[in-house]
Image 1 (tube, rainbow, N blue to C red):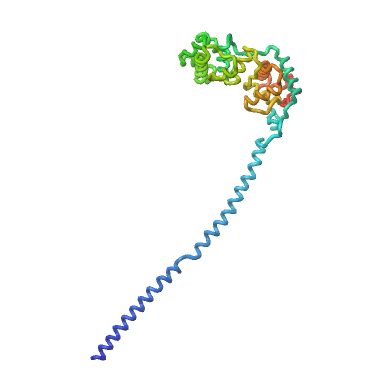
Image 2: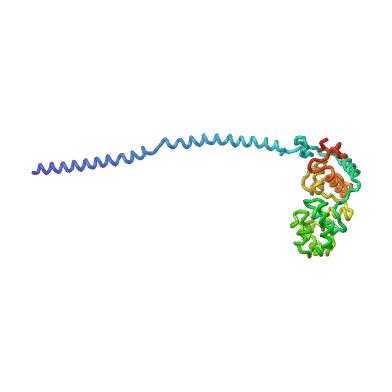
Length: 307
């Protein structure tokens, strides 16, 4: 009996040891299988793909950089030599025009003054208030168009005080044909209010005082001073700005800088007379589009002439 019990005990112990052995075998592969399950070969493709993408991106950036200078040169954006400016003549490639010498500039202006001996301001006016108001209205339109509306305007509002107290809607309807009538009506009324409140209803006679009025810049002030008070002043409107480039007088584009450049080029001349003369030439011969170079009296001196 004792032998059977010992055999039975031995058998039970063997079974328990076998179970432990099997459990240890089952548990051992777990940790081993986890590292084996991690894909070690999937990581390398990512670093290899990035270097391949970077070289492909760099050429495209370089290509854009190489194209940029060509496009700028084709558009004429490259820096011009000192003393030259860009121009596009009719039927001619885009090129440069050299500034003229002072003697040639003087010669051209003398010829133009002989061509237009009766050149004068073409805005109809009876006094300084009417001229000042008319110049403000002449922005972005012709003098002829302004002259069509000012008789009605001044018949209704003949003084700065009357215009300052006017119904703005009525003013708008009168100046409507000149274009931008909302802004222009406000400008001339604000100017009239400034004349009344700042200067007692009288038009100031100095540049410094005139430009303090709403709607009055250097061009407008210089017209009033030159036409009514005989002061020598450059009126840099669209015509003077365009012709000062075409004739090779200056390379400047800002109106104030053009004014200063013209003062240096013609230091001892009647700037008001020269301004009006250039305006007349711009309206009658040197048009913005298709200038009539064949009939121009200074085509042999003008650096932009097409003949």
